[in-house]
Image (tube, rainbow, N blue to C red):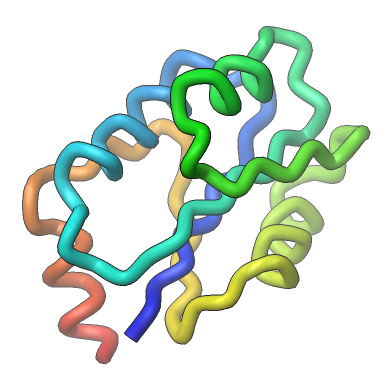
Length: 105
């Protein structure tokens, strides 16, 4: 079962990078994709994400769509059996997402 993690970002560069690092460091056993929808951040978020986490599917929305529309854009691009929305300030602890995927399966 494949999981799609959707993160909507707007001027949250540092916490989004921390979130992505925690996903990369702790959840390598899950068939997954990570999609970040950037709502036209002015703090360098999209470029930093593209540079530090090239494995992330980055969608540059071109405007501030808000959380709901940004989430819908990410979900439309997802290919997972499970779609989970993560806030950009989420820090994933070891095993947490594995337990979530197992529970939802």
